[in-house]
Image 1 (cartoon, helix red, strand yellow):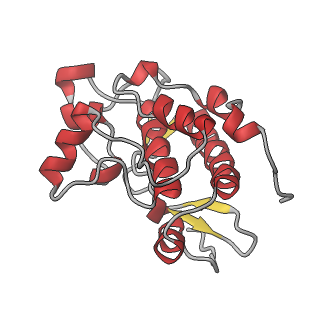
Image 2 (spheres, helix red, strand yellow; image 1 turned 90 degrees about the horizontal axis):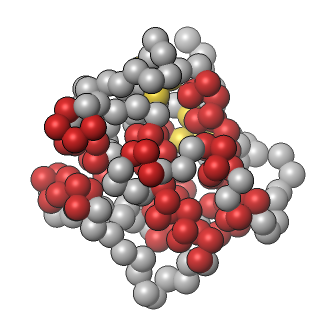
Length: 192
C-alpha cells in the first residue's frame, strides 16, 4: 500500500467550500486529470469511478487519483467490461444500459466522467443530478443537461464538456484529443 497525505483534501471538498472554480483553475486541474488518466489507460486500467471525491490535492494543488476499488485491468485494449459500477452522477450511459447498447464498456467511461467533473467544477453541481438515482440515470440515458444562463462559461469550455459527454462512447474524444483542446492549451498555465 502507498499512503499519501493530501493536505488540501479532495476536489469534492474544494467545490463544497468554493461552490465552483474559475476557468483557469479548472483547466489547470483538468490537464492533470487527463495526464493521470492517460497513464492508467496506457496500463490498460479503466478507473470506472473518476469523481471529485476520488481526486485528491497535495500541498501544491497537484492531483492524486485515488480509490481504484472499482478499477479494472484489461487483457487487451479492445476488451470490454459489463459490470454495472460507478457513482450515479458520474456513470456513463453505456454502463447503465449494460449489454443492450454497446456490448459492454471500456476506456470511454473515464472520458465521460471527466466531462462530468469539468462541468461540476465550472457550474458547482453535476450536469445530470436529479431528485433520485432513477431520475439521474434517466437524465444520463437521455443526455439531458444544459449550461446555466446565470454562469459565464467560455465557448471552449462548453465545447470540451459537450464532446466528453457524447452519449455514444466512440464519439467522445480520446485523451490525446482532449489534451490538445484549446480550453486546456490556451491561457495561463501555472508552474508546477
